[in-house]
Image 1 (tube, rainbow, N blue to C red):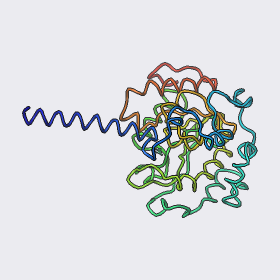
Image 2 (image 1 turned 60 degrees about the horizontal axis):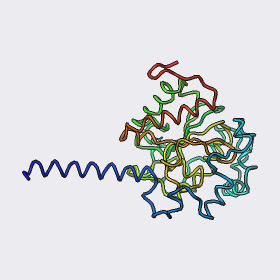
Image 3 (image 1 turned 90 degrees about the horizontal axis):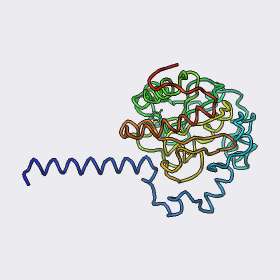
Image 4 (image 1 turned 120 degrees about the vertical axis):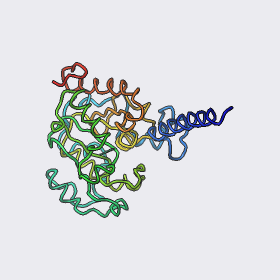
Length: 286
Ligand code: URA
């Protein structure tokens, strides 16, 4: 084989491998290997216990099935685990609105991500939104600007919201699992997610969205307390502490795998239906 052909071959093999590794990372499979049961979406006893208070595919509680907004404090009432979550930070549950919550978080030093951040990226949007998007964590652009989803992935998310759903970006609420940028855009570690989790849940409690769209494996697995890959979670309704959750692929993944946009489009249509939003002709903002 000529050198040119060998190089071409190497490039193709490299690109295929890179796509495969990216797919695994998005699936959340870059951590310790999972048991065959968890790969098939079956719960281990530990996960089943967590799922009992959090995630359950296609078995929504009556309130979530009726598509009602959660009651104030519903997340705490839904489980004893939520009480333990909030008690990690005394005073957190007494925060009365998002501004108070932001003030409570302050110049956070509760995990090592603090050392590398420019801005703590709290969240943005309608404090009474019916629809909330939860991403993974800020990237470089978000860290620089202090606002979630403002980089390339953010532009795609904005497109999904505005052109796909016919809503305004300011109509929804957007935040992340972790509020500070993980270095080198790595995935947040379990300890970092745990340190931020009470803030995310307080944010959810205060906004009280009818529906949460979990963007990517980190958001979906954190909210639902499962290790199931995103490709198996996406496309069906789940529930976390009384709130409907639709997991879907992360916009950054879609930038690398545009063919999967059709799957996100189908997930988004389910969300629109649940919210009673009229369908939008593709490419035509309402
Ligand atoms: N990716 C995320 O998960 N969140 C952001 O805010 C930006 C990119």
